[in-house]
Image (cartoon, rainbow, N blue to C red; front, side, top):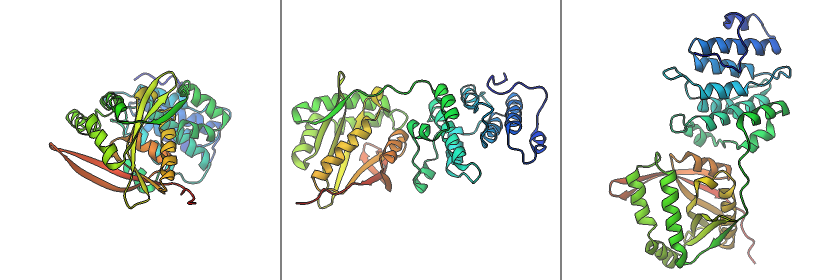
Length: 343
């Protein structure tokens, strides 16, 4: 294996005894020794252990040396085939959420920063999050902005440089309630978005089956007429419709159920989903609802992450037979919203 160009070059072989020899010293020598030992482990074909040593190097503040985010990113991108690397994404999730004392805040946010690099570099299907921990402990995975707000300036400069430019800010958007004559636009968007986003989450046959059931114009029009379902287009300036939502008031409950919220892949990650949820919440308050409710596929990690960031919590698991041998395996999630004062 080639040496990591972002770890120190070696003057000899380093082992755990070199770290033990430092005793309680936790300064530049400790950091450099950890990183040299990490280089040795990398060269010996132990990438998972090498990453653990980089973590140890990041466990203490050290202004004299650049935080090793470049090494983390390089090792993730150059992970050797056939060598055990574990699941770095899950490792840093656990590390950030189970931190003990001793520079705790710094270590938490350095772990989330490395986690974010893993999310960007590693395929999520191969390196998934620990969804069970997220659900049971109510963990909200932070956004890039959240992490940036907590990193020291030296860390932020290196980490941001490794990540590259931030996503382009979204154009101005509006959500506009539509009538039945515009439902063909929803159908077109649905077919484009589902075929781009759902492969790997549900089978292709199920994608086509669900589109044929729920996105026929006549079926959507009946939902509007018989249940009072709202449909709205998400329109971006100079782009036109880039997504859609639908929702309805639940009879006899102060709840608005969100049936659909979908955005074109190229426009995701820019705050459009959060803006759409805020708009729906405003409409829900007008209906004197106090809760938003939705269902999300258990394997749709990106959507779950967005809903948790938006204040939703897990309520229950629901498995529904939808016919033709297909099932929906979902989480039900809810969010409390402030009640509109009654006059």
